[in-house]
Image (cartoon, rainbow, N blue to C red; front, side, top):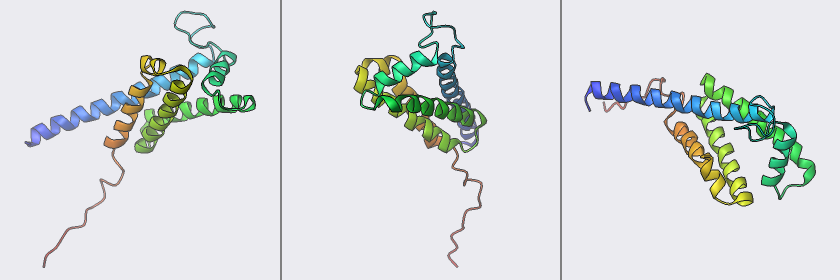
Length: 156
């Protein structure tokens, strides 16, 4: 590979990583906004929940195996995780770990959606695709150690 090809490929990878970070963060924050009614009231076009009450009913549906007393905790834990992960993705700090957290959280969403609703909803909502993008971002994000000097193998 020539240096110019490597440089072009590096620029493309940086652009793709930036796009994935923004897309995942926007998806997390959009879902959170919906829960708080920021996209409109329940029943409005494009609104899934419109309020916390409807969101918690959905959390109960997905987590049918959990005691009812845990549903508010699970809903708020997911909400806080989505906000924190979105901020981490946007800032880019500890990107590998925030992208891994995003992939794990989205995988959990996929599993609970499939167990409660079947395979079609998580596929229609691209939850598995988003999880895959997060895991790919984890794989290609700098580990933070690449700028450290490498040991040289001396044979003298």
